[in-house]
Length: 511
Image 1 (cartoon, one colour):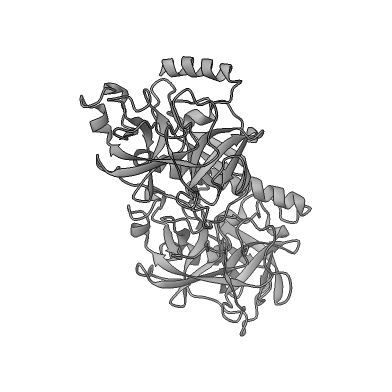
Image 2 (image 1 turned 120 degrees about the horizontal axis):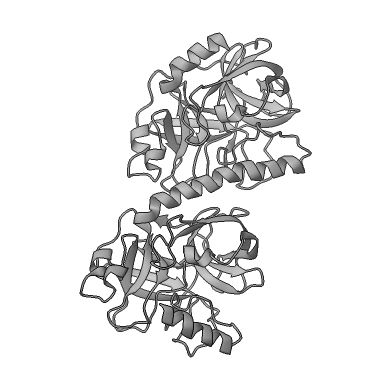
């Protein structure tokens, strides 16, 4: 590997730096392809437009790449081009908000060579941009795979990058096989790595940080290699199944950070109409919802301050509202109001002051357990066709049960304004046990106080934070959190009302 640094540095100097820094991660003798065939492929580039690494888009604002790609840059120095056959034009060019590489990354051994990038603005799917699912299990040795990127077309003597996306077909070599005597790496191959080999082809892996895909799933991230199509030395990749849980956890942490930072910026832009502590989680909203009326969801309320909607909630009794604990952090009751009985959040119905509220004592903002709260109104609501209470579920619905979530969420991801009209989305219940299983991507992040719901094939997130998830005519969930928006394998997560029912009843009587 040291040889590559030395030789390639000399070559870069000779050609005024036209070659990318990581020459041991590129495509050599690749075949021209199109972004439509590999719509998950992205180009990481400097603000001056120089391509330096590849990457894969896994959700609307999350990119997976290699840790070694991110060692010499600040987020402000990076742009991501998506949806283009060319790295230098077309598609969408998006700024980077932040990134994080694996804490266990070691530049000497190349273990844990993976990183997550959060885009400054979300990107919607199209024929040229598609999120790729992460593999849960490493394919067996010999499984066909493909690696893509804008690498050099020949080794060392080609001084410029092809402008058109390249692909190379390879075969998977699992970690044990790659470390065996059949190949020459030996103990250099660690548990966080997987290999791939193109027999009789003069092809290296692809751009550093780029995708190794098999069975339409991301199985590897281009990491390193010894030589180019050198006998006995396959290309080496970060093993995505081994590192998948880290990616999910990190992406979630960056997304939760986004909710605070991005919404604070929105609040500033709107003259602080939405204060700190009352900011809705943008990962808890309706996207692509259908307009409805309050008569269909008369338990729905808008929790607001100074006339600005911030969270949803549900009418439990004439003077008690149920919402999420995360909606009521760092805020006092005196600045809160509840609008009930209106299809629009900004007018109509009844606007009532808040006398007091109580968050669950066991609420944890990091794990999101016990994300539930009750609000006591300063005056009682008058029930009618547009204002009704909703009962609390005593038992969580079965897996697959039909449910609906409502609220005034944005109608498109990243939109700066809320629709005035109430929206709803039909979803299906995913039980806590199922949501925490290997069927989905959360694993142990889904706790016993949570329940999930999923809208398969819809670009819809849960609904306003704190809002109602209803099934069988009763409140079964309170919108809490989620990873991405209609991101495959990641349902919306809600506080499980059945599990927290006794606390709600007790708190409603003492708040």
